[in-house]
Image 1: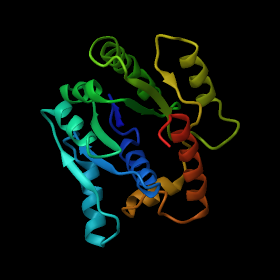
Image 2: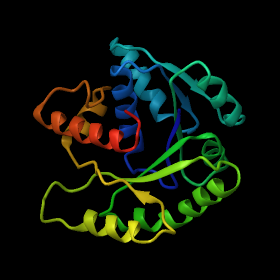
Image 3: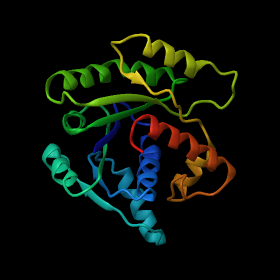
Amino acid sequence: MIILIGSHKGGVGKSTQFINVLMCLLLKGKKVVLLECDDQRSIKMWIDERREKKIPPDFDYHECYTNIRETALRLAKKNNIVLIDAPGRKSPEFRKCLSVADLFISLVDPTAQIEVNTLGEMVVDVKWVQSSINLGLKAFIVMNRCPTDPRDRDASTFYKMMNDDKDWLRVAHQRIYQRTAHKRAYNNALSVYEYNDKLSNKARGELDLLLAELGII
């Protein structure tokens, strides 16, 4: 399976959740290879920090910015999962990643209007790829950094608005909440699956439910 995590906008928490998905799959015994297609290389910096601290495991890491489709397909022959990090912006690299992915995950904070406003153009790109060069591509929007206050209605409103309109991409039911464990784990070169505190238990549980809903685990 080739899984793409990307967006048309940076700062949506893509790198944090990328490494959480990565570690979840590795800890479940999957053979996973990373394909970095974002020239900001934040995932590489996270890996380098782990290597400096001698934190296991090490990763099968590759970079590609040109022949992305061919590289991803070659890596897929030798691994259970190819996990692609795409640029957080509209770009030729982003479209090349879409052309080869089996599953596309796009993160959005439903409380941030500027993030919601960027979805339209991204959805057009994804729909075009689905109708032309990658007919089997499945795509989901995942609500990230959702408030934990049960009185907050932004995520529920966003979920209903998007899923009631078939012209948009489907929004996953399970959301990822704004928990300090995500930031603390990332800042320590860890994932929430390795970081131990009470809040990381909740973060892990939410991610497990999301990945099961998306058919990844």
